[in-house]
Figure 1 (cartoon, rainbow, N blue to C red):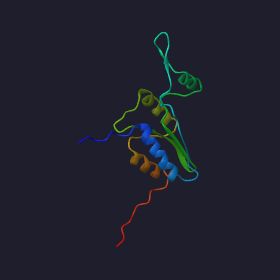
Figure 2: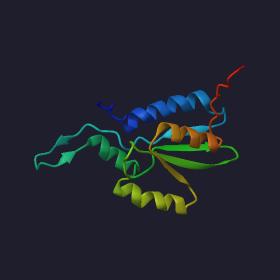
Figure 3: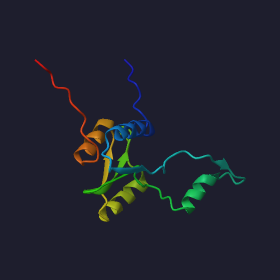
Figure 4: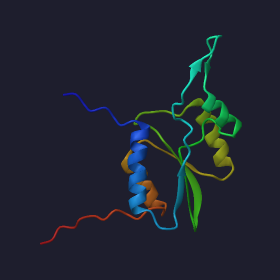
Amino acid sequence: MMRAPSPSESEWQIALIAHIDLFKYSDTVYWAIPNGEVRPAFVDKKGRRRSPTGCKLRLMGVKPGVPDLMFARPGTPPFMMELKRLGGSLSPAQRELIPRLEACGLPVWIVDELDDAIELLEALGVIRRRATSIGRR
């Protein structure tokens, strides 16, 4: 039997954001850092790949390796979350930057499953716990 392919990082990030929007506390602040999106590019006369958008973003201070999401809530230390496709690994830029962020006191959580991300956000007090059904007799 063929298994369905696991969702891409962007697909499950969209699902996570939908869940966060339903269950976040009103004072929770979060945002995405869209570093990894594919940008329009062209090949110049010397055969080099060029991206005007990528060049502009670099000039504006976008850095490779920055985790996907940033969270803050009063009474909760800010933290970042890096989402990975199931079985995915950190890029070289992420392996270099994440320890530097953590050395600055900014925790970075790396998760590769939607349910794990939700459970982590519940445990950290950023979103409300999902209701569980209790059987009645």
